[in-house]
Image (cartoon, rainbow, N blue to C red):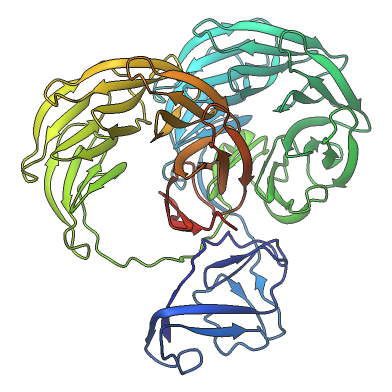
Length: 640
């Protein structure tokens, strides 16, 4: 047996079906259907406890070529793929496992996920909010009902948009997930589906599409509408077009002017098209009479049929990365591989107890609204361990939310459990020096001072004596939120604040640590701000609605320059002229910031790792390193 440290690391994707579009060996990822031979270059740390690969490792590094024509050196207990000596590396079969349920969710139709919470449209019981921190034990933590039948939900930041089949369209403030409250409503009529994009909500009724303005909340304003001849069901929006499943047909509508939407094209031949998800240039249609149907929508004015995959009675669908997850009625959850986007291939299925109506995949799990069967968490990914802990660890006494480091001192933000000051002088044996009681979600260190962002306090501590932090000053005018990024540079601290879903950037003068003073603020986004990075005279913010650029050359008057899609950004790091943002599960969005006043989105790379939406990001040399609560540590090379 040997322990080998590979000189180049990649986080593997999850095992998929035989012949999937990615393969894994020694934690490395190769974008090929079948690997016939690889050469692995090994760094000096080959620790022999028995026979090592070629029995002759001497010198700084050696190469070993595995051709998969024998199994002599295969370690079946730790590799995420297998081979039988026929010259081909294969991934193990992909399976689903039901890991948790909540049957107190009595009649769910739809589900959306934001961070650690699932938002469920639960029929007559209205909106249910579940804590999914532990997918094996999803817990109801909030509820909001108006005695009408809630059948669709979408969430953006602090806003949940809800469709009632017999009670109109309503917005709820979910900034406190345990206590959702009404923002505004249009209580007349029956609504079928909703999609939030930026500052607009797109909804369907039985005979129309309606577009709503969310930029002036708490007032909900209708911008425009478009009449439809047949019953509208599911809706998705991509670019300047809305796509609607209408039973016997699918329709595209140009929404570039939301006050005057224009019908663009339609295509028939469907039996009962109810669900739709647009992923790139392909629309995936859930037709309860046919199965899953693909359409090429690269030209929204001229759809092209792709293929039909029969099976179940699919309603809602969620495409992410190379997989399509389908709520297939009484068949349960079905997953397809869409590495060939127009021709989905079956991967796996799970027969749920009820009737699967709604689906969303997030990180390693899919969450199913299963009608009479309740709410389910389903494991959809098994992960390989590719990194070893070379150093020490210490129990700080709370749930680590954030960390900052300067020299031999680190400060760990632990949310409601306060903060810990840790000596890392000996990285193999870190030591907790002191604990602070103030809520700490975001933390920063500068010299002898620690800066702590709680809810609602911003506090400054003297840590010149690291064993005895002393509170110097604080501010308390800020909102409560699970997302409280904090950056300190020069004489200023930069934090975010939310009021009715409107997120602002607040700048605090900390030149006098005992008297921190807010000197500037400005609106930045309707989407939750997840992370902040400063670069020169600009602040770059990763938000639920995209990448926001704010000019901060005058701290008294921060000025938002632009917001750039795609949405759903979680973390940001900047290297040279590029910004890298984690997005959704397994994705990195890349932006060109050469001109901060005209930032452009270059690409979004999918399936780089399988992680949750809380992923943080850093860069060193040629590698991006990501860390989150579900997968640990990952690395990718952005130059590839």
